[in-house]
Image (cartoon, rainbow over all chains, first blue to last red; front, side):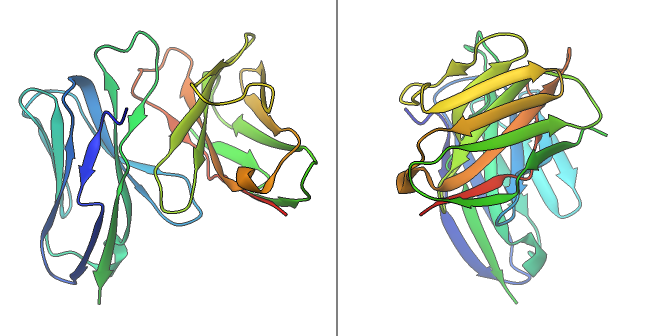
Length: 113
Length: 117
């Protein structure tokens, strides 16, 4: 069962455009994270959101955690070719008695110059 | 700080042979390490959780006799793919959690590309 649904799965847009990637679940998460992964490399953590309604900004990237802590979004303003990559949301659920992080299927983003 | 390395970064082997992949935490102690598998254009799938000094916990559908995990020290976990077959070809990624670190904090290695001919 896929607990974290990401949309869209693929997105190809022109440089300078804005975009939003969504991460949704029917389950509550104690925290959600966003990673970016380049081909042939491990994922790199971008941000961790913990509090419902929390908004964090990382330069042109804005991350939001839903009020109910079931969803999150990543908004990129004025996308650049360097933003190209696989974006993964991941979370630790409140139901977890162990320490597993659940990953979404990812959003493959391609920014055209 | 908090660097995780993997060795080798890529490996090609013949079908039926075994391959060992190492995951090391370079500047911290990791009581827990995780092994993931990632097929092309897909997300990371957790294979197993490795705790230092105890047996690994495998996810459903992962054969423990095929994917042997040994977490012998607080800085090293190994994954051995036994009797590898072409369908085992994948990108294997490990991550490590610091001793007494928060549950949501994992540091990922750079991955190992396994190709089985």
